Image (cartoon, rainbow, N blue to C red; front, side, top):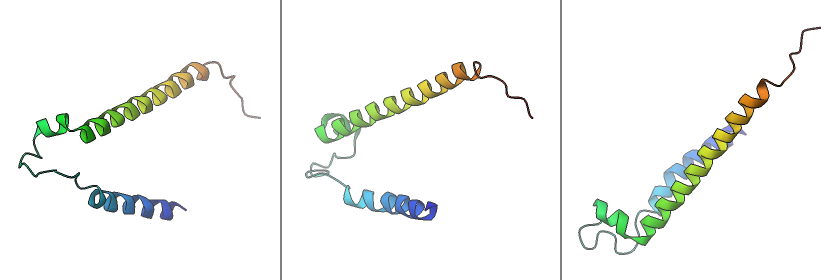
Length: 82
């Protein structure tokens, strides 16, 4: 199973950039690779904001998990070997 997941991850990483190379009009004006393009095009803006939201949610989930583990770990009874 692990081998199949590794293969799927490699395939996804290899195929995705070739499918999503550019949107229509990208580079037509000769300025598709500057910073202004990425902040002014709605496609890049929506994708960037989506990634930001997902990243913040992931960080929040990990932080809550670690925090709950730390607070609940001290309340766990110590089990002595039998």
